[in-house]
Image 1: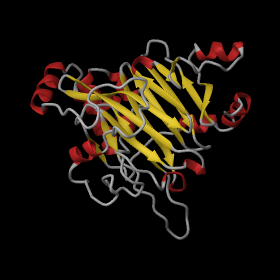
Image 2: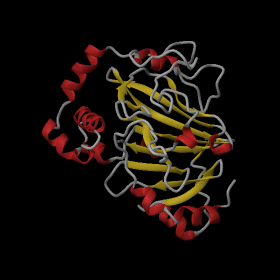
Image 3: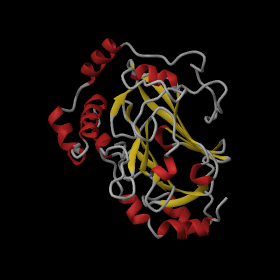
Image 4: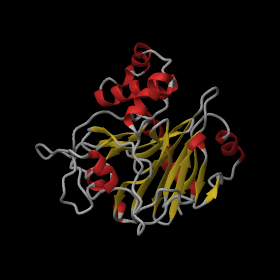
Length: 311
């Protein structure tokens, strides 16, 4: 595992720019006139809303363990896997837990900022200096460990907020960002490149925007429920979470009754759409993110959803 002092110097050289990155609606990577492909952002947030590598948004409400991405030999090293666990509530679902595996290390992040490293709860606080330990309990970002040799940065809960963030730094521009608002977990890959993610498969599709089945051929872009069921974690794949939870393959993901879901949301409304739009205004450059943000703010009755980092 990378020496933590080296990791600290490695990240601090570009930490301000990394923390300032924000996702937007961008097209699938293209080249023109010999220029490098455009880095892209992808992931899952909120309700849950899923953003493909092509920048297209879709919803999948099945409750189960889902294979978000798999990249063989990431950056020429070990495999990268991200699994998420969707849970039903009020006849819809949300991401309750996310697990990232890089090489032999696994970071699991769940509701209210709880986490485990390699199966041990709260095992990341090992930076070794009083200043860093104090900072970890404060509000500033701090390196708390490495995963597969990549630094992990934790941003603790600001005063009065129920938010946490864990960033895995992949390069000076790229990272995996896991944001938690209360019991809702969001996962994003920021500034992913064709070089690093060109062989990615999973629920987010391939890096060129195709929503493909596991056979790499069948196009499921018009059948998103089928896409979700296709990328349920299989029984012959590694269990990245500390404990299994039903349904497990071959039992299928549990889909909600959408009629009841709409009724439950209507009964729970408290924040007006106008207030939600104001809170989500910073996301207008990505129409899909803006629309989903407004939807989630009103559905959860929580303005903090707009600024939690979920989108």
